[in-house]
Length: 352
Image 1 (tube, rainbow, N blue to C red):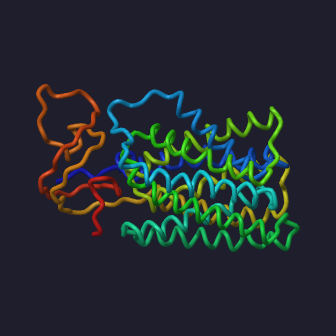
Image 2 (tube, rainbow, N blue to C red):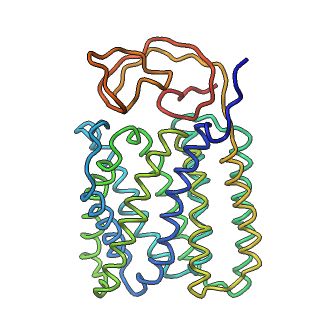
Image 3 (cartoon, one colour):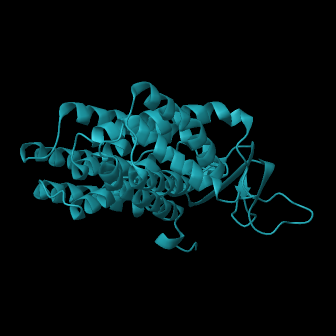
């Protein structure tokens, strides 16, 4: 009789925790950007955030066991940079300056909903009842949160539109990033940031954006290194395990962190609506973390290159000598059938 797998051994739980860590790091930057980005041009803010992400990645050593970013990946890296490093943060910074930081932090849950929809449309990732229910709870939380508009919340229509554009652009970024998640994450962050940062710099110069003083400049660069660089690395690692839809949906924790910090910084409007929305968002996160997915499935023959070990039940090819720990190289998998708990990782992107 096969032993029942505990939550701590469940790959979906493990990937979910990594995604939640990415969300915490990103969510913490929202009130920071709102505070130090006041009076700074939207494109200038985006340039500093992704400049910080590039600097943070540049000081990290490459994981030799991970496959590097190659020239064949550059077109996708460029698309990710356009949507995620230029358009999204510029629209986010512009909208953030015209709405309350607390409300903005929670409205970012729309990114999760858009990501789930796009992951299903592009990759046909299996989305069960729990994910659908979680997304429904997020949307309901957004509806509850909208009541703040009649409670003195600092909103305007243009700011809301800019935030919606930002969440959609980041959802496209999340979806386009999925094939890059199996590469060395530091390199993906570095090349995405280096490719994306010059775009808002050029736009800021053309638009005549205002730039911050020294303190705000350093704060925005630091926020970029942590909330956009390190956070993206964990996000990529989570995508490897649970896929784009679940990782994007789990990113709903980011607004909780941002909302808590915004409250500490003094944004106290519409607290009852915020608390009600927070309960709904928390239930959505719980549904993801406790999800278990396992069934008998068939692996088709495939050849690919990614980091792996030889004790995971999927890599039984032989080396001479046999390496210790994780390593990467092109390798083949023959057809194989078995049953175990798994996420939407590189070896389990089936549609059953």
